[in-house]
Image (cartoon, rainbow, N blue to C red; front, side, top):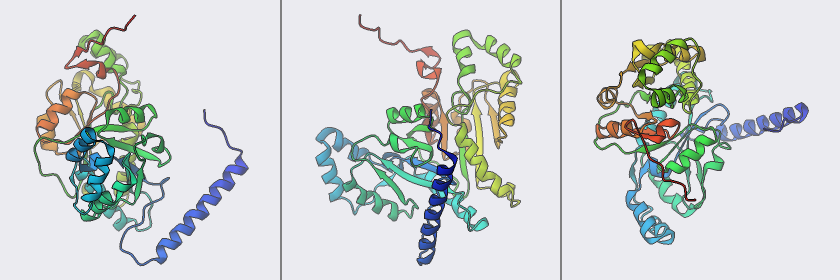
Length: 361
């Protein structure tokens, strides 16, 4: 449990922090630059991305794994003037920047923006190539965290992270255990043209936006029991899942556009893509979102049908799901996908329980 600070001391600390930010703002405002300054972390929606999600570093990773860290760092330094090619999170980051541009047009002094942080366990010597690559593509990423081979997870809360994207499933699991929204990203297997004017984010429901409480019933007792359960508890909101807070953050920014009569021209659009059946189990999902005060722009109930073909039509910049067979089907059809390793679904593959190795006696 967090220590409760004395009110006087807390107020003094807040006042001091505000003075520091005011001084920093005055300094930035005095400089002549076209580069937007980063927003205050406490107001921003902070997206932390690893270097291997932002850029395609498969060849570099192979050097690290086969020849060691010294050869890896030397290679990166030797090639630091060669931009890295885009990785799976690259289109998502570009879409975030577009939303920021629209927000700055409507609210020139607002701090409620996306803030992108490069969160990597790379060594600082590799930073020059990362910076050169970011500048080559015109990305606005000013905050870096390079931990020199150590896990960056301990820094996520310090950076006030709302979403962490990585290629390392263990780090993602660690982040979720720290109650930070996180997902493991995968490169799509074919290229599809994505919107350059609207950020499109697709979510699975159970074990992503919501807890896995209903999915446990499906896995352990079957669909008929699940349908009965959902009907019985239709008016009881589901508990929140690991990505609920990220949807909430997106909704906060959407409402800023709605306040300017820009609902029909909003550069953020959200989708619920769930295997649930609408008539049999959909009402509880929609009522849960309503009870949270959250909106979803489009809700697609597939009743067990494959998600890949629908996602081909949606063309999201990122799709979150807790089950790998949905991720595999989506990326095969050109959807950028992110696995959320949470809940009972991690113990199953295509509906079958994964046999765990017997413990040694």
